[in-house]
Image (cartoon, rainbow, N blue to C red; front, side, top):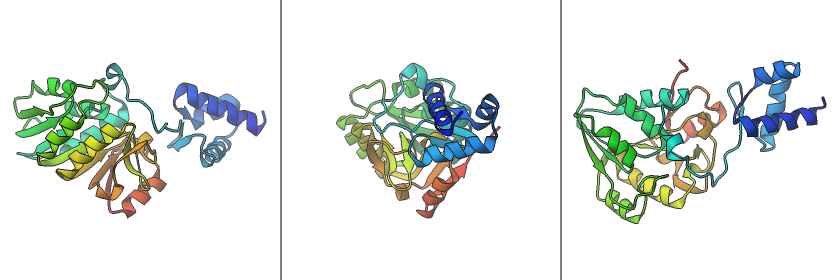
Length: 256
C-alpha cells in the first residue's frame, strides 16, 4: 500500500469511527507504529485531522450543532468524569456556583460535594431537576426561553445573569485555543457564557482533550481571562504550553 492510499484509509477511519489508535492501525496494516505516527503528523500539518495521545480524532467543525439531550445527559466519558472529579474540589462552603447545560456539567452533578452548603445557578432544566434532590444545595434557574439543546441562553437569560454575582463559574464551549480563546457554536451561547464569566470571581474552564486547540464560530472569552483550565491526560502539550504562557493555570486529570 502506497503512503497516499494508507493516509486515505486513515482519514476514512477517523471520519467513520470518530477516533483511531495508532497501535490498532499498525497491527491492522502490518507496519510499524512509527510509520503510522508519521502519517498522523503529516495529516495534522495539512489540517486533515487532530492528533491525540496514542491516535487521532476528526477536526471539529466551527458550526457543529450541540448534541441531542439523550446523548449529552448520560454517564459521560472516562475523560469527562476525570475532569469533573477534579473540578468539584474548587467548591467551598457558602459559594455561589454556576453550572451550565453542557454534557460535562451533567457529569459534574455526580461528584458535587454533599458535606458543604452552597448555591447553584444553572440555565439547564435537566441540571435543575437533578439538583432538587440535594438538601445542601440551594438552586436557582435562569429565566428565559427554553431551548433544549443549549439551555436557556436568550437575551432575557443574559440580562438576568448580569444582575448576579458568582463565586465560581464552570464554563465550557466547543473548543479553546490560545489564539481564539474559548468559543462556542452559536453566538447566543457565547454571549450568555461571556456574561456569566463577567459576573464571576473565579472562571474555571472544563475542556477535555478533544476541545483543546479547537476553534468554534463565536468567541466566548479570551483565554487570558480564564483563571483555571481543567483538562485531561490526553490534551496536546504544545497547545497547553501556549495557554499557560497567557497566565492560565492548567490542571490535567490523570488516567484511571
